[in-house]
Amino acid sequence: MAGGGRVRHGTESYYVVGEGLLSESRGGRATDADPVEASGSLGEASMAAARLAAAPPFHFSRMGPRGAALAKPLLDKLARAMTTAGGGATGIPAGFTYLGQFIDHDLTFDKTKVMLGEEVTPALLRQARSPSLDLDSLYGAGPQNERSAKFYADDRHLKTGKTRAVDQDAAHDGFDLPRDRTARRLADRRLALIPEPRNDENLAVAQTHLAFIRFHNRVVDKLPAGVPAAQRFSRAREKVVKHYQWMIRHDYLPRICEPQVLDDVFDNGRKLFEVGAEPTAVPTMPVEFSVAAFRFGHSMIRSRYDWNRRFPDGEGTLGFLFTFSAGGGDLGGDLVLPSNWICDFRRLYEFEEAGRDDLVVARTESNRAKRIDSLIVDPLQNLPPGTFGGPEVGFDDPTANLAFRNLTRATMVRLASGQQMVAHLRDAGVRVRPLSRSQILNGSGGAVLSDLTTAQREALVARTPLWFYVLREAETNDGRLRGVGARILAETFHRAMEGSEHSIVRDSTWRPTLGPDDTTFRMVHLLLFAAQNKKRMLNPLGG
Image 1: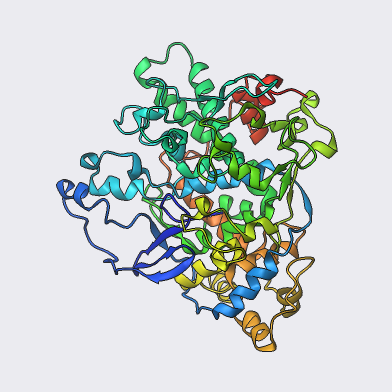
Image 2: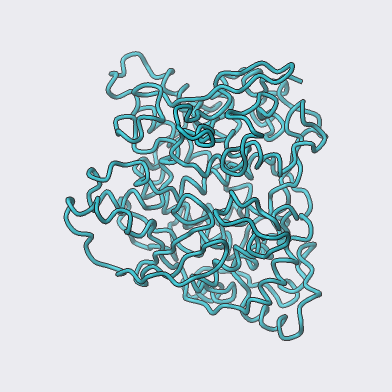
């Protein structure tokens, strides 16, 4: 799921510390980019604004060595094998698929997009383009910033939008993202007034973003009356961010990653990535995470969802989730979300985890994510042009195939192979069990590679693309990341939390206050708090 620092997934720059700007992807094609100095001062504050547009959008780094690219025909065959059909079901509620996308966009958000150029000092320029888990994708540069003020209803509350009434479903205030109703161009009036436009590329991540807006607004409203007006936003933000980080560490990550790897990293520290870094120093983003390991979520995507009472039994197709957004579609031709497409969160999460049996739906209505493995659903073989920023291409053109795009990006940055990362981990003192030849070629219910020639099979076994390697690890481990993939995720998240402005890693004594006790805060608790514990707020359409 991870991407670069630019708004569209289809145009991504990879400014790797020590190497410069390697290349860019336009329409899924690797192209050479102009070299940029890999180090050195950005100049005085007065020069920052002038250089902002040309400055590298995001600072990446390498966790492992550089790798060698596989031939395009092999990558094309591998991509097609991965998109023939989605993998099996898992026990993970499907909402976590899109929570992962929301987290990805937070990690890779470029805050300088919503900052005034003349205010951007060289230090702030780098900080604003660094991976953190501070919810900058939700807050932008804050309500006091001139360019971010449009996201706010006042000096502390974020805006929400109102849906359009459809047949028996009335308009619902607060159940669509806010939209730019004052734009001159009709199409621009659909655009969401949120800092991160990628969070309106599909309806599931859009409704997730909206849930976080409501969560923040309720935290503001529940602050003690004695908190001064000037401090209410900052106090609420810190509380929101720390609960968000706790939920990621203790709810999201253990569902998709071996818990013992997480515990080792969070209890004993990192062994591979930015070891010994000053905790408050600006983190970088390892390309191994962004281009490979955190793209595991693509395999969790379903082709159909039981979305709500109006679109049950799989009628909420993945295509519709793109259509009823402003980034991946056109909101079905409307300027706001039609009410019949409001999310029923009971179908995406298991509220029995919070002791709310009244919010549990029938098993046939409860959506489960696809297993993490080397297969992704076939609709992702032909992405809508709006989701990758490229021109419309013919059916089955590889540049619209999500798997091919992921594999191509890895060649752009000369990503290490799975085998190289195993060796690198072992050199760092990390115990890891490598995949066998049979596991790479045959997997366990994943992609079937029978179309590969003998030479291609040998090349794949010798230099397995890291993304494919991580997925094969998971599918041979009951759909949970292990080995290389687990370690990359754990160390990257640990460093991103450590280097955030508000950090549960640095503030190790902090405990959640919005869950049932001081150690428990899951995504369902976040949703319940945001919904004022009311069923009609989690499922406005009823049923």
